[in-house]
Length: 260
Figure (cartoon, rainbow, N blue to C red):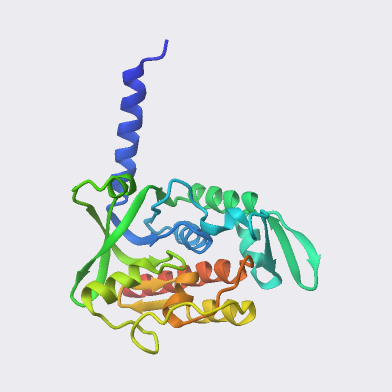
């Protein structure tokens, strides 16, 4: 016999265990696209306390839809080791390009990352950051349905030694610092340059090269890098996203371990 109250108790208690574990972190990642998932997976694998905050119900970002709802994605040769690390299957197309089923790829990234210890807080929208002593010290988040309903409800906060801006094209966390605080980022202008029109070769290169700390305590990965530094969009080729996620994880691990 199923006890309906026991089912509710199980959900509530287990969720609150998860929530409590996400309030004091080594790393808070904002945005569950491929860069965020890859970063979270590598950080969790390294033993870091890491949680990923995603405003939508689903995770995976734009990877699910492939190109124009044709659910295949393209990955260049240099990013294949990341797919190998996460158990993503792919096929050679030719000319140094490989394809993967978009649904399988997104699912595999999510499965491996969470299996390695990444906590995912979906329907949790980061609307602000914590700030102290000249650096970002955490994130402020609220249930996405609360915002959609226009309810006057206060958010809660999660402290973190490092925060990853991985919200993609909107670059939402960086915008908070520039708009609300008037702070300067590490971009050439000190602000958010904005994404340029498509040039996959240039865009892929810049996203990886410019991945890193854009303000003390705040790191950018994935398409947020392009938005901050004025890089070109790339379309449904995901090598830069994957490599950016791995690189930001490696940088944060080195920085946190060095500060310990």
